[in-house]
Length: 620
Picture 1 (cartoon, rainbow, N blue to C red):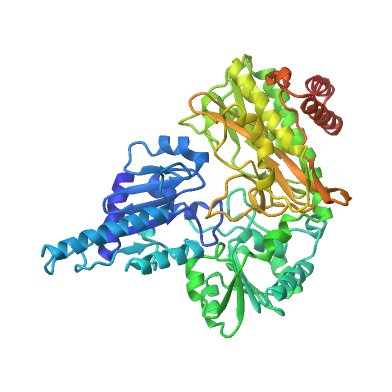
Picture 2: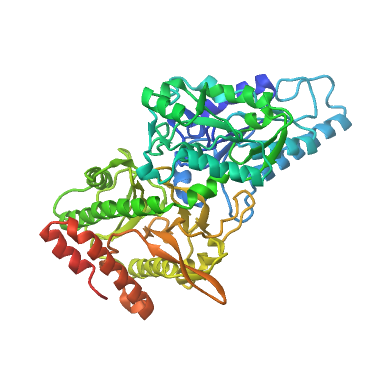
C-alpha cells in the first residue's frame, strides 16, 4: 500500500515537473503534535512517530527522524521503500545537505549530457521539456517559513525552482479525516492568573521594544495563552487552530466560526477582540504596507511569509517567554494538579505491585488503569499525551505505544516503563516511572540506580542566574557517562499550563543544533522536566521523570543563585535500586524526596495504601 502511494505521488510530481517533494510533520501552525487531518507524513510513510521529514524523489524515498524514534522507525518502515536517515548520527546528511547533493548531482548529469550531445529537445525524467532546473516541491501551508526561506536560498544558489501551491498528498488520500472544529472554552482567571487585557498589554510592551507596529501569531499555544481560551482541535493538546493579528489598538482572531459558541463570542467582544474567518489571514497580511511586522519565522508557515509585503522583524514570539514563566496563581495551581496526579500514579503503583503475577495484565491494560485513576481526580479534563506503558524491550523505544498488534503481557520480572500525564483546570502534568515487576538482572539494577542518581543530581542543582539547560545538562548525564552510556534526546523540556506538555524556551540538553533554538536562561517560575534514561535495544528502557520549578535561592556578592523545587509527587521504586552505588548526598536527596511524597500523598489514600506507601518511601 505504501509503495503504491509512493508511485502515485511520483506520478503527480511528474505531471507538475517536481523532482524533490518534501513532506514535514506539521500543520498550518507548526504544531509539534497535529490532528489526524494533517498526518500526511504518516499516511505516506507508515511511520507513526511525532517527528520526522519525508523526502521523495523519482529514485528514492527517505525519512529523517531523531533519536527518540530510531528503533520505532526501523520497525515501521519495514516492507516499504522508505530509507531511514538517523538525524544527528555521524555521516548522516541533513535534509538540506541531501537536497543540495541531489540538485548538484542531477545538474551535473544534465550538463554532461549537453556536452555529449545526448540531449536534443527531449523530455527529462519529470516529463517536462528538458531543462537544467531542478524543482523542489512542498505544501507551503505546512512548511515552516524559516525552512521555506532556506529552500528558496538553496534553489537560488543551485539554479533550481520551487513549487509550493498545493498539498499533493490530498489528491491521493481517500477518506481523509475532517478538519478539526472543536468547541472553544474560556479558561477563567482563577486558573490562568492573568487577564487577557493584561497579557495583551505585556505583548504590546514587547512590540514597542522591538519597534514593531503589528504582530502576527500562528502558534496555537501562544494564542491560547494570550486569549485565555482552550479547545480540543489537537488530540490531548487543548487548543483551537487559529491565527491572530494585533497592533497597538486592535486584536483580530482568525478562527473557524464552528469553533465558537455564544459564551466565547461574548467573552471576545468584552475583550474587544474582532473575529474573522480562518483563511482570511493570508489576504489581510498581504494588505499591510508601510508597517513593521513582528513574526517568528520558525512559527509561521511559508505561505504566510510569502503573503507579507511589509518590513518584517523576525524574532521569537514574546508570548513564548511570557507563558513559560508561570505566574504565582499558575504555580500554586500546578502544584495542586501534581498532587492529584501523584495520587493517581501512587494508586497505580499500588495496584500494579499487588496484581502482577496474580492475573493477566497487558501494556494496554496498564495504560487504561492509570488513565482511569487520573479521570477520577477533580477538574480532570484529559490525558496530556498518549500514555506510554512499555514492558521489557518495548521500553527501549522512547515513544512506544501499545496497540492490538503489539501489546505485551506483563510478567513478574523485568521493568514496566509508564510515561503519562494529565490535563486539569489547574494545569498539565508529565511524569515517568519505571517499575520493577519482579526479578532484575544486575545490569538492569545498575542502570536503574544510575538513572535515579542522574535525576536527583539535576534536581539538586544550585546555580547562578544566567545559566541555561546547556550549562546544567551534564549534572544529569554524568552518572551515565561514567558507565559509557547516554540517551539520544534532551534531558528535559518546559511544560505548558493546560497546553502542550512540550513547551519552550527552557530545556535541558547539551547538544547545540543549528535547527533548534538555544535554550533560554532559567527564570523564576519556569517549570522544566528532569527525565534522564537508558534505552538498550532488544533489552529494556528506563526513565525517571519529575518536574522542576525554578526558584530564587540566596543572593550575595557573587550574584543571584537559583535552585529547583521538585513538584512531582510519586514514589521511585526502591525495589530496583542498589543503594551501595549511591553517594551519601544522593541517598539523603532520595530520602528527602520520599518524605515529601509520603507527607503530600498519604492523606488521599486508603489505610492499606497508606501503610504500603510508608514502606516503599522508607529511608535508605
